[in-house]
Each structure stands twice: as structure tokens, then as C-alpha cells.
Length: 283
Image (cartoon, rainbow, N blue to C red):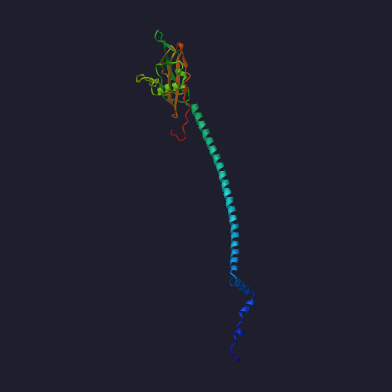
């Protein structure tokens, strides 16, 4: 038996030789050596390539996401546009329906409301003219409801005696409006004294008047023939409410012509226009 110790170089395989003999291992070690043992520029180049690839991938991904966002934004804008068109159409339909209802309600009230008017009879000579005063006349005064429903809370503001003014008093709308506004304050004209207030004929006239009826009570008002360019004017107004508790009014103005004949003034004969309350107004 040979007891000699074998030479390690003879018994242990040469690693360098084994790497070369094994193609896979040899390639791995060559790549390793190329990356880390030869020149660090290779590492930088590889990192640059990887970074560039990542940047390209992210750019494509971001572009795809941006396209999706743009599509979603376009869809949202189109949805909002269509929603606005639908909302505008709904609002227009609602406005049209509300206006139709308002007109129908107004027409119904106009058709069914009461209309209180005055009735003044033919002149009756009270006293003939003398050297100082012209002829005096008296007139029966009443009211009638020509409407289709009952009039309530009737108030007649009529001076018992006419007042004298110039020929064109009844042609001036401002003056006439002031005169009839005074009637609401129970004064026949702007210069009236406290002791010359209007006699409220409503105290002796009916407060309620049914449709198509005339007041049974009649009163007398007085006027006189014109003299020296001055005419006698009979003015007044009637206030009342309807079944809907809406207020109405009628105003009138006459002047006394020769022979006691009553003529309508150019201004001062009017009626209220139907008042349409707002939808939120309480009844």
C-alpha cells in the first residue's frame, strides 16, 4: 500500500478548469466578472437601459390612462349637457303649466266674480233757477250686481252734494285720481274741511248683494246746472270683496249739464282689474 499523501493539485479539480468545462457556470462567472470586475460603466449602462425601459413603459401607461380620463371627462360633459337640456325642458314645461293654470284661474275669477255698478235715476227738479243760484236737481242713487257671484263688504263713498269746478276738471286724470283718493279718506275733495266729510251712503245701503240683483234702498244725491263756466260734479267709488276675499272697486264721475242731464267725465270712470294672488299667498 502506498501511504504517500496525494498532491492536492493532482487530486482536487482545478476550479478555473471546471468553470471553463461547465458552459453555464462559465458564462455566469464571465458575466459577473464583466459587470463587477472589469469596468463600472457597464453597470451604469445597464441601469440606464432599465430606467429607460421603465420610463417608456410608464409613458405608455400614463398615455393610456390619460386617454381613459379624457373619454370619461367627455362623457361627463355630454351627460351634463343632456341633463341641462332635460332640466331646461322640464322647467319650460312647468312654467307653461303654471302660466296656463294662472290664466285659467284668472279667467275663472273674471267670469265668476261680482261686478257692482251704480244706478242713477233721471233728474228731478228740486228748485228752479233764480238770480243767484242755478237750478237744483236731485237723483236717486242705487247699486246693482251684474256679476255671477255675491259681492260682500260693500262700501259706497259718495258725497250727497256735487261740487263745482271748471269745465276741464273731469278731463285731468291726476286731479281726478286725487279727488277719488280723498273719498277713501271720507273727504269729497282736497280742500274739504273736517266738517264737510263725505256722507257714507253705505251706512244705509246693503253690505251684501247677490248676483243679478239691485239694491232695494235708493238714496238721493244733488247737483245743479252749470253757471258761469262752472260745472257741478258728482263723484264716488264703491268698494267690495268677492267670494275669494279679494278686493274690488268701481269709481264714477258725472257732471251736471243743462237741464240736469248727467254726462260722464272723461276720467274717473273705472273698475278694478282682477288681482291674481301669488301661489304662496295665504287665503
